[in-house]
Image 1: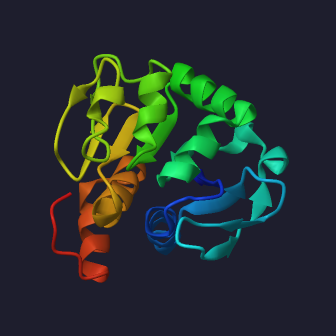
Image 2 (image 1 turned 135 degrees about the vertical axis):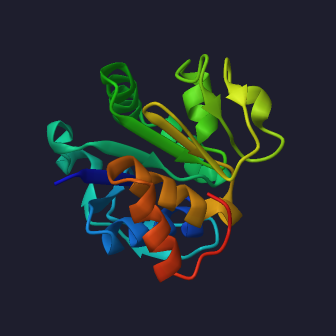
Length: 185
């Protein structure tokens, strides 16, 4: 069974993080919410506290297939400043394992040189931080093991792209129909 970790730092964008968790769990994909903070309860950018499943130090990354980095300006900053998480992002990318980010968080991948020659997208106005990327303007885009999303309004499209990564287009279309999503993905 596939396993995904979605990472929560103070100031994360609630819709981006929780939409992904919801869609993946509906699909039956083992998805864990992981705090990078000192506590399992992490406050989002709109002051909504979320109780995560575990803390970063409790994750066995050898059993994880995908890392997901939600946006939110402060949340993105906190993720990028978390050295143990960034070590895993680099290791996953080097191993060809899935690394996914939405909104401001794809800038982390750009700063780390992980987008060179890859299609990617991020929150409008931050594209200059996607160093080396072939910037697109789709709601979500996959290039090999990297999946990026544009922003909060693209959270469902981004989540459906993650389902497609693990299953196929038919599965993501079935989920879109199930949740009455009629947008592009």
